[in-house]
Image (tube, rainbow, N blue to C red):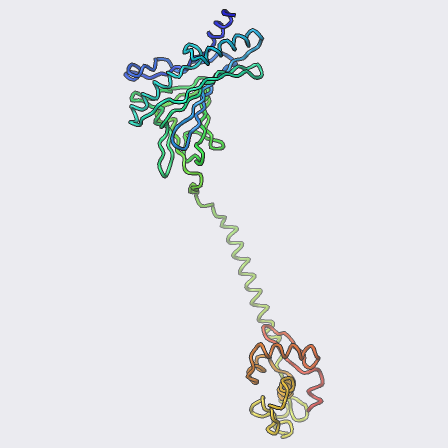
Length: 361
């Protein structure tokens, strides 16, 4: 069992940090970068950003367990890892030294808190996981949320590369969306896959409050479609104007009645005193008291005086009644068969039933 544990320990990669020059000496971060994992094993560093600027880190290493002996050896290894054995799995001391160097570089107080270790076995895969909170990892203002400077020290970045079996995942803070990033993203999540190298600016990400819209360029105008719509609108307007003109041209003109029922063109109006219209159509005969007539009788009298046809607007003018009263009265008379209403354009032409005006004359 001990020999098997030792064999797995030999396959484990311990995360170490490369800090060149003075920082490596003063901060004690070591001189090697993230080491490559054996085949079928990988390292994933997940940074879950918090709205207050802290970052919840989860660093996990996976191992393939192809036999019961390997599984038992891994369980023994996991027990030592959870007991805090710095020689097994990832040591939190690495990140404590990195945060100290970043704090000195940024002037922002940082710390590693809430350290926890766990392991799991699923589908012949063993996983060792180190969890901790890196305080003040990001800078938060009223306008944006910035990440990046915590990866740097006075001598450069403490995370210079990812190997082929390593990846770095950055989750957005709740209530924020990506505003700018050095790589593409999906669902506001950024993922760097190894192999990759980083400089001081390669991990800078800016977020904005999710309810603030990112300015978008105006959509490209389709000028052909706009011109087509304009031409169509002009055609519709031209057709409407033509229809209105045709209706006005087709509107009949009320003929003036003569003494014998003939056209006014053949005999001037007023030659027969029995049918001579008064100067005021509202009073066709001086010997009739209009107050004794009903409203219907007054309308019929006006129509007969004008040869049996009048515009509704003319009736309103001659009677002095309101538009509403005249409209209601004419509608009732039309239903009773006393008159006929014909809509011409925007006006009504009122006429007596066929033959009635001639019979009265």
